[in-house]
Each structure stands twice: as C-alpha cells, then as structure tokens.
Image (cartoon, rainbow, N blue to C red; front, side):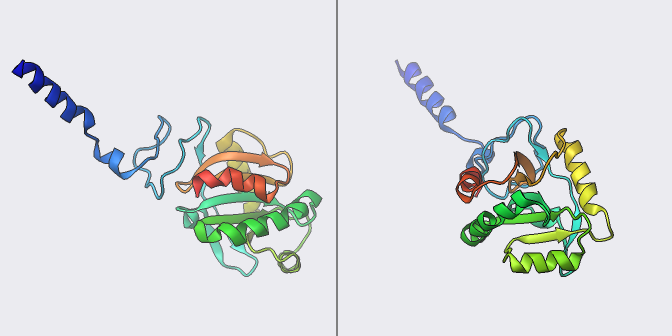
Length: 196
C-alpha cells in the first residue's frame, strides 16, 4: 500500500512539472519555425504557410530609411498600394482609424508605394492631403519597391496580382496572412487582434 502511495505521489510531481519554455512563452513552434527566433510577445500558432518576411530598406517621403528589421517586435500590416489606385484610396480612412486606435499597442501600418510616373514629392503631397498617418515608403534609388514585391512573391510562392495587397506580419517577423483588395477597419482589426 505504501508503494502505491509513493508511486502516485511521484507521478503527481513529475506530471505537474513544466519546462522553462512553457513558463516563459505561449508561442507554439512548428517544424518550420527556427527555435532561435526571439519571441517578443506570445503569438498565435504559425499557419503552415507562414514565412519570414524578407528584409528591405526603403525611404519615407522625407528620406528617413526604414528596414523590415526596424519593425521586429511590432504587428505589421505591409500594404502594397499606389496613389493612382482607386481601391487603395478607399482603404486609406480605414488604415487611419486602425493607426489611431492600435499604434500604441504595437501596430505598424507600412505603405509600400508602387509608383507609375508619380514623383516622390507627389506621393508626399498625396499622403498629406489624405492625412495618411501610417508610414509611406518609397524607393531609395529607383526600384527597391519592385524588388521587395519580387522577394515577397518568391518567399510566399504567390504573385501579387493587384493592389492593394496587404500582408499581416506577426511580432516575430513572419508573414501569416495575405489580403487582396481593400479591407475595412473592423475586418482588419479582427484579423490583427490575436497578434496585438
């Protein structure tokens, strides 16, 4: 009888223990997730098609350089758009609402500007007229936005076929969702909420 009690007590101690990883993070790691990724915040389990967002360096319309690595630790909506694009314009007020409400919680909306013939000065004036509160990025030397588009196409194994196209990137830098076409503030909030 004493042996049975001893065995039950030992099983209870071993079964209730937790590893150090379980204590420090709720992040689920699948086979494609490197174990050395710094976990900034508990994030939902990565979908099977999640990939690391490619790094880039682009400029704001004022000339400040911004890289993907600068955005690690934030929830990013990476939005490929153009000032010539009607559906992109329709989405701007929704992005402004999201920025106002959730930037303080770690949301960063980053507009990757696909220019046709517009100058950077035109994009800057457009962003001011439309009161765009998110980061609006443009080429540094001429074709970096197209290179980023190509790199994302290769990483996700899907082509960007229209604008706006938006990617949801978690705090650890993984592309977890993709959207084609304009989305409302309420739709986007429901998508980003688990990652904030």
